[in-house]
Amino acid sequence: MTTPLAVVTGGAGFIGSHMVDLLLDRGFTVRVIDNLVGGRLENLAHHKGNARLSVDVRDLRVVTPGDALFAGATYVIHFAGIGDIVPSIERPSEYMSANVQGTVHALEAARAAGARKFVYAASSSCYGLADVPTREDAPIRPEYPYALSKYQGEQAVLHWGHVYKLPVNVIRIFNAYGPRSKTSGAYGAVFGVFLAQKLAGKPFTVVGDGTQTRDFVFATDLARAFLAAAETSHCQEVFNVGAGRPQSVNRLVELLGGEVVHVPKRPGEPDCTWADITKIRTMLGWEPLVSFEEGVAAMLQNIEYWRQAPVWDPASIQEATRTWFSMLSGGVA
Image (cartoon, rainbow, N blue to C red; front, side):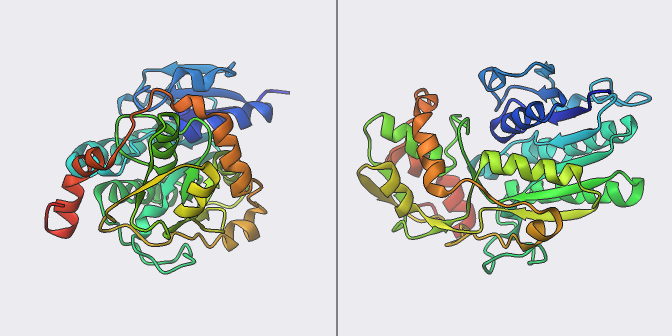
């Protein structure tokens, strides 16, 4: 029997590499496409498929019967793009190029190759300051260019499904965490910031009073959701994926253990993110399996991964988020 082939764009990155692991465990041959701007080679240590690294999805050129990188693909799982929020306010055109046009290039390559399913990694940031728990039919209110670019990529995916009949599904990711999350120089997700601070013996920089909650979902649970969205007969669907159990930043600090300093709350950030996951539970039978406590323990076991990550403090955070405060609140903090 022929081994099925899956193409994972951004497969050397955080969630993408966990996707690769799961597909390999399920017997797929996996072809990885990654430009290694955000991804890391060591994330693919167990990969035995056909990795095409230093390839940007925006550089894909479609040829009949499809870009050679996509030829024979059963599934295309599209993670490639830029994921940092703060720099998107400073470099919006770059985000539109990578997250919208890059998605269009991947869609066209998948369409030409006759892929049986294209699954897009969207972002819950499209909801903005949403009512919670948040359903898939909640109003769309992107607060910054990253959120807008990911939503426009999502619109392109659904449009290709509608016009070109490419079988597509969309996963709106809430607050992803797990081993291999980014260690780049951009100020970003709380886990990477806190783990680097813990390694350096520095206090955790808690935004506001720390009572804000986030719907943290573990990377391996996310990978299972993407595979379920690929394997289902349902198409043209949008699914929220979170754990459905928001956790406070203060609870994270308690589990990590360490001192705290507080930095100002940023405009445009919700007090709570909380995915209503009824739809994916009902239609795909997916359930989160990793508890928050288990997930944080796994992060601590892999803490050395963040040894070379930047160590943020209140002063450097203030400088990194200056444009954010200026653009979204009308005044420089």
